[in-house]
Image 1 (cartoon, rainbow, N blue to C red):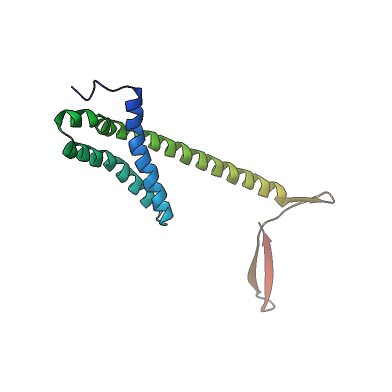
Image 2: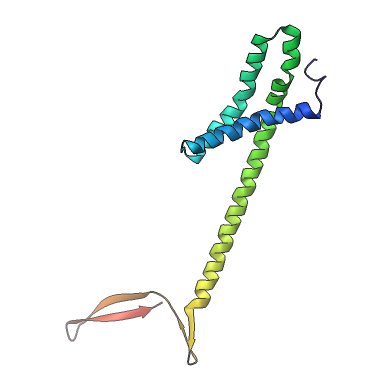
Length: 153
């Protein structure tokens, strides 16, 4: 089959660059026009996958039969490489989200340790733990007056 014969490293590289350029261009334009991140991603994915179809249709309708077959090699290989590009982008997104959640948990753990350690005050051999104070009103049955009770947790 004519599609598999003339494929070398440069043709495969070009087949990867076409959807990647469409992805980058659509994402940047989405950011320029102040769209949401999720909308920019979907716009970029759709644009990158439709690039090869537009190019393939343009080649098929403008060139004669033998030249169109040879020229359509790259768009056809682009259709084969698009799923691989999406898998790589998904893996990179998963790694980014994992690193962000790991850093966030480390930050929360460090902050929790710091707040507990800084809450202990040692003055004159007395240790006190800083905690919020809750004020409750207690009625004294004998005096019929309101008094306040402070509870330290």
